[in-house]
Length: 227
Image (cartoon, rainbow, N blue to C red; front, side, top):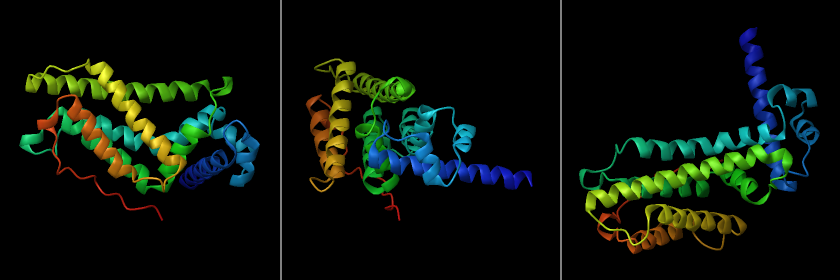
């Protein structure tokens, strides 16, 4: 009985998160109430508060279902170069591979795409959502740190003097990739996010002086489209 109750609670939690995804996308985060979410999920308002302390907590839980696997990909690349060939087992390879696979997930997975749209276009950082802003900043900081450390490591390995600091270069790469994602979400038919993302990232990294460290044969790990 206890196991069944636990499974039912988990099912209710997922129904609430599913409802939040679709309502946030349709009408924005600020204009969606917890009662709206409960009604869409076929649950009570009390059930919402049983699983989440407030809207920000629910929003972050919704994000974690999608973004944590992507964050884990970057963290894995940061810790372990396994899978890279001997000639390409360097930090720059891992930066590029993790970024390409993140773009592939956005393109291929409908849920990832929906949540990214909510996070970038449907949320206002009003007082009740300050926890959401802090999480966004933490994820951004993690990406910047990963790229900065990788560029510094590759610079040391190759004895290359960077034209700008690794910190500034990381900021530039983040702005480039983040801008492409947001523009693609506005109109997915306008351009191929994966193709354009790979091309402009290569140009950017070559501009930093990393031409000989780039492997043009790297392919994204193909993720089947969501049904």
